[in-house]
Image (cartoon, rainbow, N blue to C red; front, side, top):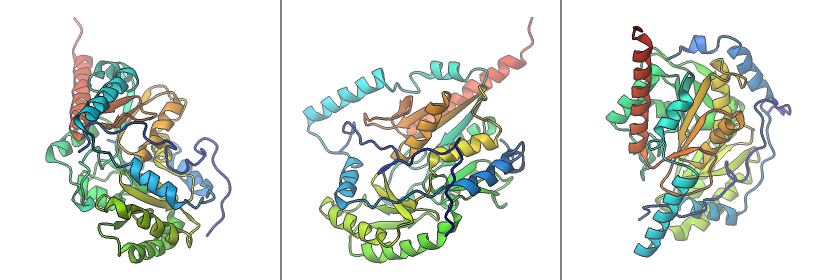
Length: 379
């Protein structure tokens, strides 16, 4: 494997360890019980792509202790509460939305004001954002109504799905060829196509050289975890997911030991966490935030462009990397989808996919009103 040790200064950041946001949730959960691919790479985009591939640096993999893994598993699993405790959690959440992260729906006028006169670019996570979180990841289908809302968004704004899923799988779930797709936490980026039969163009795969070791680790994890009822290993091409949503909590520690044992043989890989899932990824400085930067630069929206407003909506710890990028840029809106009060770099919040859909519909309606006003002749 090539030992690349140079990082592009404008896209490199210290890798967040042990999790992508580096922070555990502070509180319990509330309620717990259209641009073508060819034009995208114009204006220096192809050169930027080549530079990214040439300069993505590996980072030393830190072997996680099993105790940290189990704590991470607990942190992503909401606790059931008594009625009194649930009321306190609700009050805590209400205070969180009022003081720190207001609803993007309740604050839509502020969102619209921030977007006024700017090119809006929309980035969307999939699981828990466009589709509900379900026990079987192969059944995480989005509704027809959500698909229609996303289609309308893509008609009026450049739009991308940024997910930990394999890009081919999420494309089949979404079924909208006009979108950009960044799968495997941004390590597999494809551009739009004119129809569903046409192959989308690969724009960037910074971890391609890791495919052989990822496939070996996948087979090893499948064999190692087969004795744990409910555990499921998903191959997302450039990363692996160990789902424990259906695993009895008493078996979390043995499962963590199994994952740890496998990773000892693969120092090129690192462990991060998501919502009831352990993520195994290549040890390189790349994440959803880097994918957002790549897509924005490829579209011609460099850091010094002040006429662009990226909007990123996601529900997972891995989305924090994208929220941090927008905050660092000093422009853009991060929207966390959560019923939990938690530390986040997002600016606004939405509770669930139903609210995400309502927000997307309102965003399109706002765009149509703006366009209609601009076309109306002045008297």
